[in-house]
Image (tube, rainbow, N blue to C red; front, side):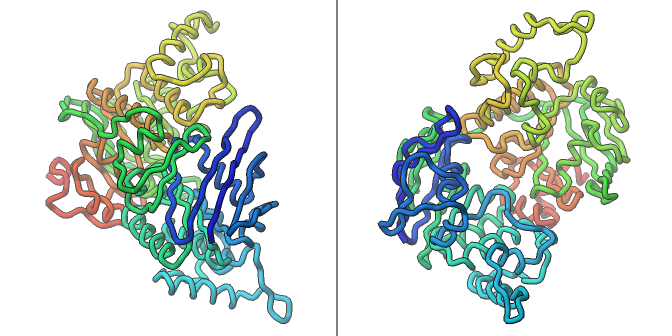
Length: 510
């Protein structure tokens, strides 16, 4: 099946998300759609899948113009989509999720679950999946849940399959398995549109690459193009892709975590007897598949978790049991993993967001009155220093792009005297240009003698920034290894295996 998008234009008010985009996907090819955060890639695919209606342009399949009133029409035409955030019902079984929206009934009018199970088993056998049709989706690991999404799409006879940022929650081994599945689908004649911001994956699996910038197609590239060329096309300028850093200069003090235990609201242990230290002048990266206790660990450090036992000491001062404000006042900077929900108040101005953690005292307040002139001068200085692309300090932070929102959070946290900096998923959902900037600021903070904790699911980022790497699995630290540990070792640790003796960190194992 040949898919063509002709002159697709999609607007949201004054914003033109897709500007007369043309795209051709040939039968049996993997066509990668590459672009910065906010470039319009996912919007274009949501138009294709019937979730959005375009103001202009046509969707053409095998020479015939299509009119999709919703995803059901797109699926009927042979379009399937594996979303970045899985569209599955956790309390349903695999078979029930696969048949959802296309329910078959038997002779007495009951759901024909046997037919759904047969669909699951048929597709699973074709790709070598180990999937129990009667397993509850909520009990499956994320890699298996993604396979359920693939089975769901293929059971509806998808001829074009869209993968939207499919590797965001996978281990390296699961990512490699997914690449193999994509190649197998291509070889069987399925066309694949692969949306990603990870240049290594693009070059590994793509047959063709189309680059979108600011809602427009700016060029095509071959898989043989190097990372620098692809990044330049995405951003419109040369991008430094390698993190430059010297050997760490360690100092005394820093953060010491001992026997930390965190229990969630459902009385489940989510951080289980965790111990580690971070010295001033080093970056400790915490790696692992999302959902293995990393979020709760960072929240415990900054005082956001209440059911905490063990010790969290910063330069000898105990933080356990202190409020968030008390922890911040001790000199802890924190970049949360969800900038929109936890890092910013979208309706507040950029300037107001820059002082969210400074609600009193000099230089911004006098006798409980905000000194607007001082705030504006400070905001303009930070906008320039952190290269925040905004119409001005009075613009609502929620109107900024994801990368610029992240820069506002960084500017706020790094504009104070810090004794510890904790950054959780610091580059999630932002483009290569903003990633370059964020990485430089993290390294500069480490070089200024601040202990830094970076939590990331991106192994390339972990390896680039870390002096040491701790890997978490099911709430525990599997091991701590040097920052140059091989990807293969890290991938196995992310699946729960202990590191080999020669890879273990000497300070921890001594």
